[in-house]
Each structure stands twice: as C-alpha cells, then as structure tokens.
Image (tube, rainbow, N blue to C red; front, side):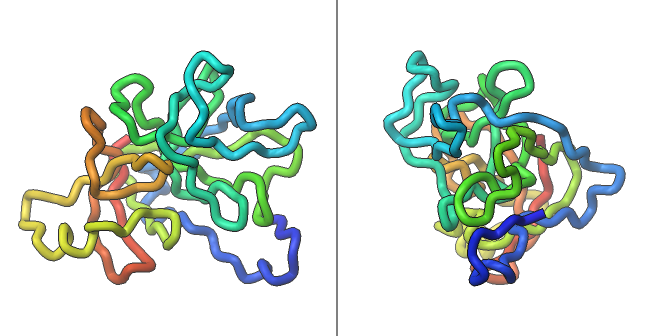
Length: 193
C-alpha cells in the first residue's frame, strides 16, 4: 500500500505491474540491506560515492534512481548479505547477479515501508511485467525495439541507477527481454531472473 505523505501523490500509480505472474513469478520476501538506513532509521538513497568495504555491499558509479525521493517498483535489485537486497549498480553483475524487481516504493514521499525493512522482490523466469516510466531507462529502447527481428529480442540490463535499460554494462547479465514498447511511458518485459 502506498503511504503518500502529500495529498498531491494520491493518484500515483505503481510503476511495476505483473501481467503473467500467477504461476510464473514469485514475490520473494526480503529486507532492505542495512546500508539503506541512516543512524536515525530514515531511508538513505544509494549514492555514487558508496564503495564496497565502507559498510556498503556494492561500489556504485551513479546514484540510484528515485522518484520524489523514493526507490521505485520495477528497479533491479541484487542480494546483499543473507536475505538483504540493494538496488543494482549496473556493473558486471555475475556476482552479485540480478535477483529480481523491487515490488515497493522505498523512502521519500511514496514510501510503502515506513520504519519497516521488509520488501518484496518479484522473481521468476518467463513472467511478464508492465513497467511504467520513470522506472526504466528509455535511452535507446525505441530504436532497439524498432530494429529488433524475430528470434532476436531486445535484452535489458540493470543500468548504473538500478533501472532496466538496453545499454549493456561490461560483463552484465540479462535481467529481462523487451516484449513491447507501446510508448516512452510503458514497456512490457519478460523477466529472466
């Protein structure tokens, strides 16, 4: 449930919607990696200055994408320690590899969690999701989709800010394949993790 802190956010839509997920996908119960909380318990956005060894599970090259200060449903997450998850960094992600798509708004004006750390992560190969903008990086998707041929789908990867996109970071693994791009504000993807 979205818990908007401002009345102007009452019509905010989820940016990730399962279309074919009843038997293909599983909402996995995970929790936020402790690095995503400040000392006072408030949400801390993953920043480009985060580096492994400083209490952070990943070294980042860009800040994680946020909408009104919130991580958005549909962002790619990777496993941290135990059942913890953190927004993907778009780097060569064989280890940690993409774990699934975030199910909740986290932090900011659209926060689903409050002071809880439990989040949902959608996982499951062959499940189909609709992702709404701005939860994906549309850079190059229009041309990639229009030039795609049968049997050669457009592969989507975790970008540096954690969103799905067509740019392949060096050594990155496929997170999803683009089924359709009806507009710059909506894509349909076949999840591969």
